Figure (cartoon, rainbow, N blue to C red):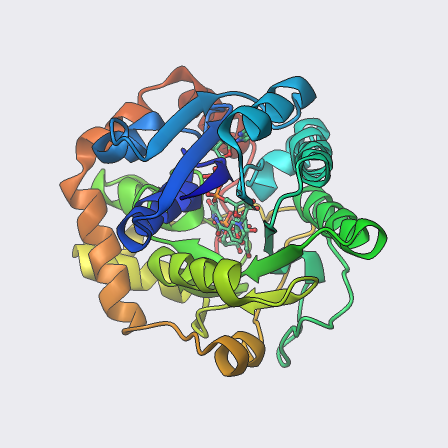
Length: 343
Ligand code: NAD
Ligand code: DAU
């Protein structure tokens, strides 16, 4: 039996990954350490919470004592670190907790991994560490790190730290850098669930700037499959890009969502841009494609439709989130100062 520590497993990608891994690996026991911040929701794993192959520990990855005891008592063999503060806009308001969790927390996990002789340590990173692209080109794993937001800087810092543990201590680490994920259980501060839910409620859709920024969208199920393959077969010390090869401007994506939902484009409202807003992200995924034979499966339109359907079918899940004071305070703080701009 492998005992895998998954951090941040109550968040969006972590919970999708735990469910995926459960179906793939009968021989895994999963220990999920999650601090249950505003983004951590135990409801995301309700269907497996009482499974004998699953242990949940409510705790902080920055807590050295707790993490040491988790590695020791559960005889952890591998680690996948999803835990992070993950929202760019929040990092622009206050970067403190981003550096605590994303950098210090990663260091605590790495130190314990050294101490307890962990066999594989997979760091979940992001394409945002590369900075932004212009109209053309793609980021490869060799592109320089040029983060532009405090969030991206904290993730790049963690990546640099992970690399040093490989070089200095020969810790068997790997890094995954993925593009923008979408799918079930995504916290509705991120663009796709925010737009779907607001459109369903007939509310204005706040598109930043002129809406021409480009993101490369990756279905969370495809990302989970990539993470699983990299954890199993990736070469230690290496970085792997994982992208959906699905570039689209924000405004065209919002229009697509409105079309799927049968809602009018008059709901779109252009608002003050995000400071330092990265223009375009796009990943060269030839390394994972050629070396590990991974590719995304199915069409973007179908996966987007399925995602919309999931939010339609799971209104109690998102209504619960929206009704919390956390969410309402955040929305007011983030959007009340953004002026509507006529385009
Ligand atoms: P999320 O915000 O939905 O979830 C983060 C989870 O981490 C939550 O469950 C939260 O409670 C937990 N957490 C936060 N601080 C913690 C701490 N100190 N100790 C323990 N748990 C803590 O994030 P997500 O979108 O699922 O992202 C997961 C990972 O993937 C992050 O590392 C993020 O940087 C990376 N990533 C995300 C995307 C994306 O599009 N969402 C794309 C690329 C990379
Ligand atoms: O690229 C990977 C990254 O993708 C991850 O590392 C981050 O954790 C994740 O949050 C995501 O970052 P983005 O900033 O790209 O995602 P977000 O959903 O916040 O925004 C997507 C695009 O939509 C971006 O160009 C900003 C724009 N946007 C976003 C929101 C929330 C809007 O126009 N209006 C909005 O209200």
